[in-house]
Image (cartoon, rainbow, N blue to C red):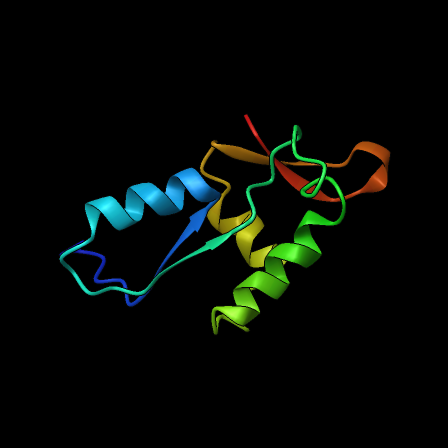
Length: 92
């Protein structure tokens, strides 16, 4: 945290948000959450990208888009899945 110096932390899913809140409780950083792109989630399977962008906008992050998320999450933990032509991220 000292090196990156974030101004906000956004968890991808409830678990990530809870862990961030626990780990960063004494920092005063604003912590939010967006929907996790789990293939097991019926909600995430219906337009995850659009929902995530709306949630990011609600957190004041209007500059973040699905393309930005694809880029930032391209560290090997997530990949873009296009079953039935629906662009979404899935955990690898």
